[in-house]
Image (cartoon, rainbow, N blue to C red; front, side, top):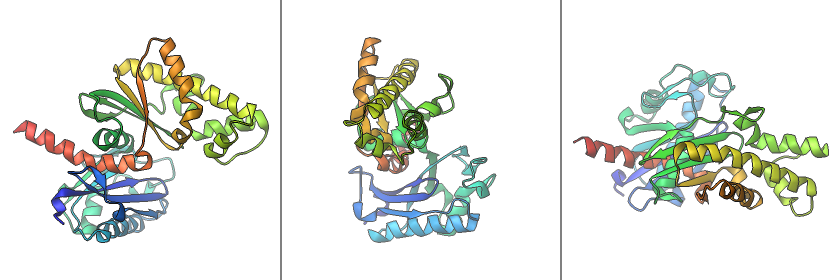
Length: 298
């Protein structure tokens, strides 16, 4: 295989690394390359880099392609262009603070750092949907991921940026307080006195539990208020929603659409089909965007 036509997309999470080779012409993942490993994000830089590199090598080896370009979706704060981590205060990847992660990876893999492209993980979600998912036909759109945290990104005239709205003032706190897994778990405990593991368990109780239906109705109202301002501030043609909570979208999207329509906002909402793969697809797809920008400068 010609390695130039393939890019390894990598999604770095708090406890896992996921990698897969993307066919840049067909815009799909080579499924046999899919590799996911646990990462001790509290470990030393040497331990973490070693784990990442073992995963990268394994993904390429599965499809018999030499190591080539890497596209990496990385949480922030991070200097993505230069590859320097500024992550601090959340007890994950603290060992990398102030260090050039890109150069460390390049050295371990014996490759040029010019062949490593690092991008914000929330931006990569939307980039993946634009490159190979639900959003390829739009010029201006917004994307959010609903899960452990709240991710948000904006696409304007094809340029994708991190909206960084997780900490935006919202109701009596910040947006992430009301639009994440912890809100569901906290609210269910407040109303029932019972602890539950995740939103998936909650969704399974929807039809039989008035309490659960009440919670999803409240979440729908919170999300609708958030999306109203987000959409209007960016004149978005469409909204793409991903993350684990999106798997229960049938429980809350009808209410969101009803509210938006009552505000004369007729904006299409797409639920991600790439979902967990969106970020790594987007990380690889960023190479295509960079190639277009390079051509435009000539």
